Length: 637
Image 1 (cartoon, rainbow, N blue to C red):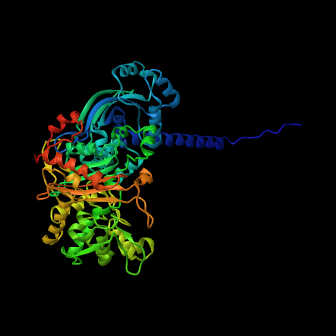
Image 2 (cartoon, rainbow, N blue to C red):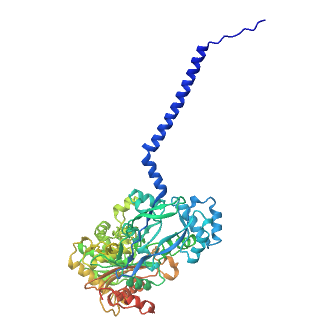
Image 3 (cartoon, helix red, strand yellow):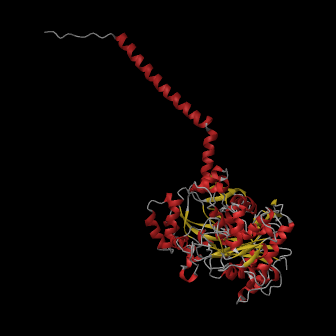
């Protein structure tokens, strides 16, 4: 059978072929056009962008951290300063096996367990930092050893750092505070304040005290360098430089010699002292015992030191002068006496018989005087001199709590003074409205009786007591307490004085003030509760002792110090000013768990006054202090 032959249509086949060729050529052309368009976009349209990226690979911006401003006392003694040293830093993101690398590093440079603990703490808290210190203050031998082995440790480098140092350590730790590593919370705060750009390259920031409150003044302005680098990232040359502006220096109102004397007068006892200049509100001394070494916090405190401070029964981290709240005890009585005279509830001549107790009408409970059997006939003058409780029980019942609150609040008790460091607490000056708001209970007459002698709901800080004492000393003027006296410009050296700020003046009758102030002078004379402290003084000073109750005593019982745990014993308190005729210093003292103010707190005030007014050192062996203190005797001498 013959096979069938299929005939092809050559013109059609040729047409199809040409169509396929045309489509393929068009597709190739489109691809070339797209490629050309992309080249044009990258090399012409985006030329400036990629040129900038190339330059960024070649040129880097390095921040220049400014030197932090110095802090000194009013006589030029340094309280916070800077020094340079080398630190070994780790960039965790550049290291694959961090633990192995640190072990190898420890084989050539000493890294203690404390160093590792601190590093791990920083690593956990400072996730956003590029580098973290593993060892501070390297020796020259350690620097040379690491330099010879640097090729083995990518991600680890030596950096020159400026360190903060606090020469006086515990003595001014609660005033000066400290700087420490910037954490995420600090970064968020800086960002919200629009200040983050000024902290590029900075690792530390003020945390508490003056270092925190005056951070903007102390930090300075960050500079920068444009640095040309090679392919390995090594610097070749500096193209341009904007130098940093150092922080301004702060001159405090503190007299470090006076602070030193006050600290020594306390000895090993716990407590606080605040001394103010009643003519302008300057803080002359600010003591909180015990203190702590603020140098421990600069590079990140190690766990052992933190536990020691944080778990100590003596609470060295607690700023007692600023944040410690205590019943004011009988130091409250001068303000009660002024209230009696100003509100015309008592006259200076009025007297009453003190049987040693007071009872509210129709109530069997007896509110006891500190002296069994009482003080006999007592007028206002004597009530302050011998600190008669019964007189003030009766007075408070006549005044009422709201009159007491409204009048005495003018002296700053129960509210913040506004001092120029953070963390102040307000204390408590109670009222009937406060009790209803806080406890949903009405105010009882018995509550008023306790408040009248500075007990009950009454709570105050040593700073507030010093502020209130200042107002009495200067006849009603309330100045803002402040710790910074001057700010020195780091560039020009010019010094700006911080002016005194008069907050308000109380319209107190001079006659009434004189009655109270005369009694406060007699407190320090024979027959007064601070007579021992005032004996043989070469000047006249006024004061009022106080005993702040820590635990309550049951009705019918008597306080017996020997039967009470040491931490539950009464606090000793004393407020005073000197010289009485023209005061230039007013203070408040608290000594924890040591009994009466006359026997413990008042003698401290005497030593402080002797030094401040006469340049006299305590009789104890202070030979090691003589030279530094004599070189900085106060301006008033």
